[in-house]
Length: 283
Image (cartoon, rainbow, N blue to C red; front, side, top):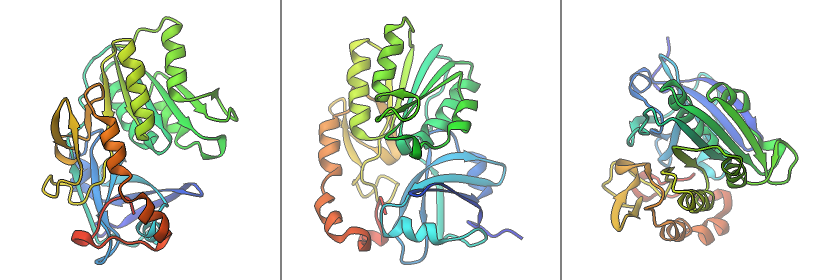
């Protein structure tokens, strides 16, 4: 008999990226594209927010990068073992409608979020160009899944070892220059990628939605750690987002806030484990 929060399957996508599916039928029944969960590996563990990549009737799949003590501890768990906590779905779902033709940009691990968004947009009747960007061929993930979730898939690599040689923004501009008319763009990935995607789409007057990933602790809007400025107003990514109008986001502020603990994390390296409120973001 399956237990709550039991890992029903586990997969290594790259040496640094793993995927688990967790038995959580109540969450699976409610989850929509763009939402996330918060998990704890054990009683002393940090709270790690991870976007829901896909669901079945009983399980929720999340993808994680092994970057710190908590995600390394998560990766040590095997199929059949259980997580301490697995809470969700959290956040507002991505707004999906019949836009017409849309581009979904995913940068690196952001493709784990771009995948369900593209799938939902395709199911809503849109023509979806999914553009996935990676540094090099060896770390391309979810290519087969992404190809099934969209109308056309474009893989980009920074070094040109696979697919289009360049950034996702370069590919988007190439498609626009070729005459493609986009009704909406969704950009999901590193902050700098989303910032420059928004600069590009603003030039062409294309409405753009971004999925924000600021520092987060409780996931309910109470701690205030995930605050950001959108259109001159303070918003909280965990309850007001994570999706926002990219042309209204103060990216420079978010980038500066996300770098707050960079030096400390580099000093502590993989031994660092935040104890604030029982744990914090980004393992």
